[in-house]
Image (cartoon, rainbow, N blue to C red; front, top):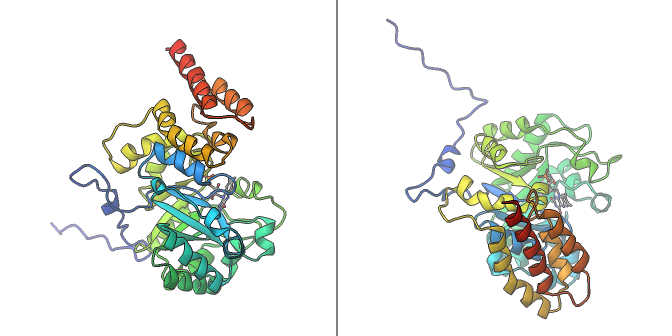
Length: 358
Ligand SMILES: Cc1cc2nc3c(=O)[nH]c(=O)nc-3n(C[C@H](O)[C@H](O)[C@H](O)COP(=O)(O)O)c2cc1C
């Protein structure tokens, strides 16, 4: 009998080497690939308070700052804008800009302050960003992005990543995305975070640009097949850890934005399910108890409770006490003298509702 014919390898489909990254080591954990689960940069959302809170839910999730422009860093109060707590690691600074020198100076400062990664925003379609010709507009200028990445890498000494879309306006064929990644990877970026929808530069608001263009995950999968040596992180519309697990069969990492914010308790399962960690998931009340010293420290340094409490609103989502918890925080955290007691009361309401329901 003739020996079975060996299947010819498909040159378009190099073997995906992220199996290694999925393999749990002897301790049962996944040591490699720090991008396996990320929380997206979100303006007016992922500030330092938000990130501190999220870190109490997951030790392994990679956190991103809001986009901070080079103008704000170089001509504003950089120390205040870039401030973060040591507990937040691993944490990445996302920059907005298009000038290699300004990006290099900002990246250098970010790295000096201890950020683990500098990410360049090539995905945001807001008018402000478009007027400044950065964000997603940069996808139309891959050579400029390559110059920026080169300058940032030389200055920063930490990984420089790029967050982009799959296309812009009519330019949405796969070869465009492939060309962009190839050019920028040549400049030394080894990790790309890809929001799996294109952006329309005019006619859609930023919110619509996160909802209307269809998600095309297969484009991101194909990128991983074409560039197996790069770390490819998929973003857009991911809502559950089961979906994360499915995507992780095709790519190296997933990044969640809205779901991580609206339903933060999802993060409490990330370490066990995606990284094989064995520590117990914190309960909701554990998280708040551990947040208390931070809240008290920040309030005594001049922060307002509402700036912290707004990030907690979704913690009990789907639980019996969710509404009472939210209402207490929304109504009472605004008072100028509001302090920890408001969170304590919200917690008591939520836990009592859970106990009554049990
Ligand atoms: C309120 C908000 C603000 C955002 N700000 C940024 C930003 O500063 N930088 C960025 O690259 N993307 C930003 N995004 C896009 C997210 O990072 C992410 O790509 C998008 O929400 C899709 O992921 P999701 O479907 O998991 O939310 C923002 C999204 C939201 C909802």
